[in-house]
Amino acid sequence: MSKSTTILVVLLVSLGVLYSATVFVDETESVIITQFGEYKRTLREPGLAFKAPLVQTAIRVEKRILTSDAPPEEYLTLDKKRLVADPLTRWKVSDPLLYYKSVHEEVMAQRRLDDLVLSELRQELALYNFGDIVGGARGPLMENVTRRTAERAKEFGIEVVDVRIKRADLPPQVRQSVFARMQAERERQAKEYRSEGQEEADKITAAADKEATIILAQAYEQAQKLRGEGDATGTKIYADAYGRDPEFYAFVRGLEAYERAIDQNATLVLSTDEKLFRYLTRPAEAKK
Image 1 (cartoon, one colour):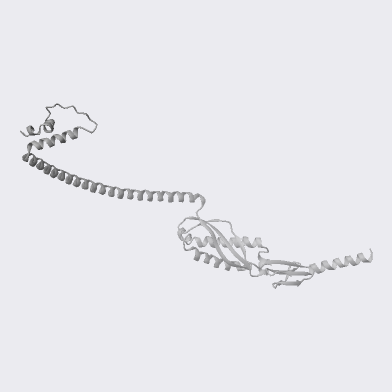
Image 2 (cartoon, one colour):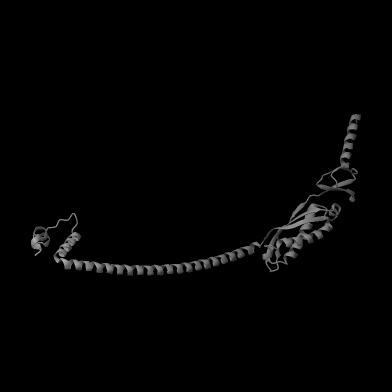
């Protein structure tokens, strides 16, 4: 092996040893240094640090807030109704060493945390009625779950920020029957409202028909009265006219009869002895 090759190999080995001895700590994480599995120290400040090459190992632990989305579970409420809840937990590592010793990695930490949340949530939901859970009691309920879960999670080096329910609903098999009952109830109310409306409409229609009948009867009575008065006045006028000049009255009545019986396009053939001609041709004789 030549001298240059030896120098190159030594340089590469030195760089490898230097690289393995260098630890870059990001601001979003903490680094635990172990030696053959034994804890040595924890690096919390961001920047460049060093460890013994080859014999020491750097284990990175996330410092940011993490999210654990537990699968939906079915719970029993105080009023014996089944409820499907989907909890969501936000948490972070508060003690990297305890976290590493107890759960070792994030996946295991989420499993442990989900178990705690589901246990506390089941216990808390059993104290409330279904209507309160889906209504205004959810806030205090989840505060109790968060507080108790946070206490139990401390033994894993975990700080629970909060626990929330993304969705609280009835199981699918129960939901259909509930919707059917709700629909039946709405239909019953709709029929009741329609029946009340029809009853009110019938009352209004009956009252309007009665009023219209009364008005028509009164109008007919008034019309008959006026017609009778008019006929009486007309008869009196005819009688007075007949009494003053019977012949003239007969003449006028005749003209009126012809006027009603003959239109403008009609042709009428009359005898010369017709009274009408007497008035037109021999008015002096007609007066006798």
